[in-house]
Length: 250
Image (cartoon, rainbow, N blue to C red; front, side, top):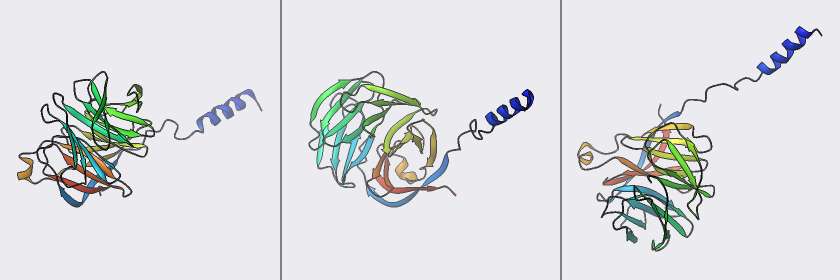
C-alpha cells in the first residue's frame, strides 16, 4: 500500500465514528394529564413538595408564614413546625432526616422526619430555592441555571452541573432525572442530572380556573407518587393539588 493510500485509510477510519459531533436530541414535549384533584391550603406559599412513603411533606415560604408540614395528601397536616424569622424554601426527606433550606438567609435546617423538630442548622453560600435527593446526594437549585450537589450529612457542596436554563426553582428527583419548576412560568423541565441536558419540557398551563388564578401565585411544587409514575403538582397559594401524568404533547 502506498503512503497516500495508507493515509487515506487512516483518515477514513477516523471519520467513521458517526454521531460523535451530533447535536443532542431535542427535549421531549410533554403535557399534564389530570387524573384527580385534591384540596390544598390556599394560604400555603409552597416552596417544596415531596412524598416519603405515603406521607406528603410540604415546605412553605414568606417570612412569618414559613413552615414545614407532613401528613396524608389532600388532608390537614398531622405534623407542622413553624420557621419564624426566616424565608423557607425547598425541602427533602432521607429516611429519618428532613432538610429545609432558606431563600437568602444562607441556612439549611436539619429536622427529624417524624416530628419535624429542628436538630441543627448549617450555613451555605448563595440563595436556596429547590431541593431533592438522588443516589446518596442532595440536589439544590438557587434560581440560576445551575444545580449544586451536596453531601446529605454535612450539606457541603460536592459538585455542580449547568442546565442552560435560568430560574430553576422547586426540584423533584426521580431516578437519574431531576424535575424542575421554572419560576414565573407554567413549565417543568426534566433534566439529566449527570449532564445537565434538558430531556423533557412539560406544559402545565391551564390547571386553575381564571377565578382561582386571581388569588394564586406561580406553579411550584412537584412530588412523585411512589410506585406509580404519577405526580402531585401545585403552586404557591393554590387552592388545589393535581395528581397527574406527564404524557406526550401530541
